[in-house]
Amino acid sequence: MVDVDKLFDSLAGYVDAKIKLMKLDIREDVSKILSKMVVSLVMLLLVFHLVLFLFIGLALVLGEYFNNYGIGFFCVAGLFLILFLLINLFKDKLGIKEAVSEAIADITKSEEDE
Image 1 (tube, rainbow, N blue to C red):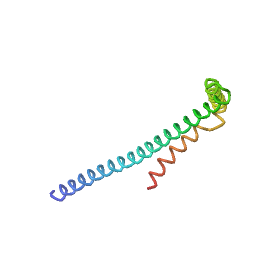
Image 2 (image 1 turned 90 degrees about the vertical axis):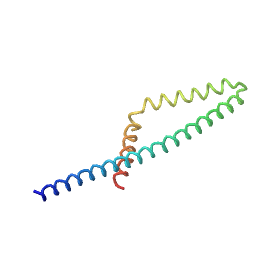
Image 3 (image 1 turned 135 degrees about the vertical axis):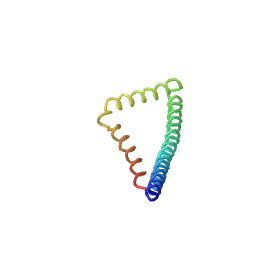
């Protein structure tokens, strides 16, 4: 009976170690994915601000051209409206949902490969 108790204790220790290892692997995967998401979010914010300031500059240039800054900003707003309508009209043909799904799958797949 002593051998069975030792075997049971060894098995219980193995299971505990395996559970701890799985928890550590999950934490590592989650932290890698979160870090990539944070970096992507920071890059997205930087690009957003870049585009914002470029369009503010365009509005100011157009306002200078028309001698009325309000008209320049309305022209840029109209450009955004046209862009929004085009994207909304062709959203299924552009494949935005599929591209985002593939990007997420690539991030999780690359983490599994490592």
